[in-house]
Amino acid sequence: MKLILESWRQFINEAEESSPKIVTVDFDDTIRMTEDGRPNPVVIEKIRELKAGGAKVYIVTSRLDNSDNKLQIDDFLDTNDVPHDGFYLTNTQDKWYTLGSVEKSKDGKKAHVLLPGGVVSDMHFDDDQHEFDAIRSHIEEFPEDKQNIKLMKVDWKTGKVKEWKEELDEAAKPNPWAICTKSVGREDKEKYESCVLKVKKQHGIKK
Ligand SMILES: [Mg+2]
Image 1 (tube, rainbow, N blue to C red):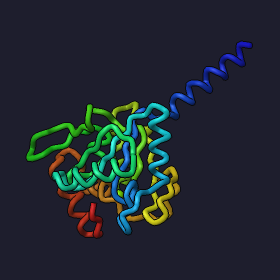
Image 2: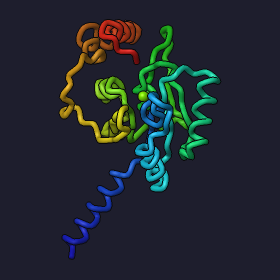
Image 3: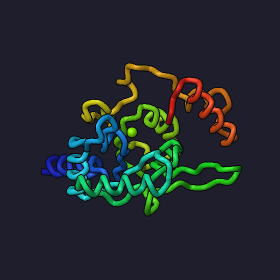
């Protein structure tokens, strides 16, 4: 009996751990496909399921933070009945700052980048490989209980989703965050960030 109870408790704990409380979702080529502007039913259905399971869902896009973009995104989410708890435009900044609510330096001043409500992501959907590389390279800067953030890779062509694991990534592309950690280190954040921008430019990485 004791054994049964213990394994039941373990099962409940695992079930609780695996249901994310805070979910973040990219917009372009994740919710809205750029090719023809159609909504991605695969991701939208996942959002509905996660919301029904009690998760909070925030849209996080690296688009410029301006009223045109806000209106377009709001309108699209409304028209396509995508349930969500808010959206956030990172203004071309890498998303790891926002998802991990991590300190960043701006003109020598430090600031925390927070999602609405100051939350930290448990699960992130994105089509952009480089956002995942950046998250993985900075994972130890995330709060300790959020370092196992689930990364869900969206295929920008088919819209299909699968969990992304670093070790399964066959296409080894240059990782600017890893390169700069090695070459200039992370002590001087401004130096580090300008290195990341330089390496991105060299390899034609847009985001
Ligand atoms: Mg995208």
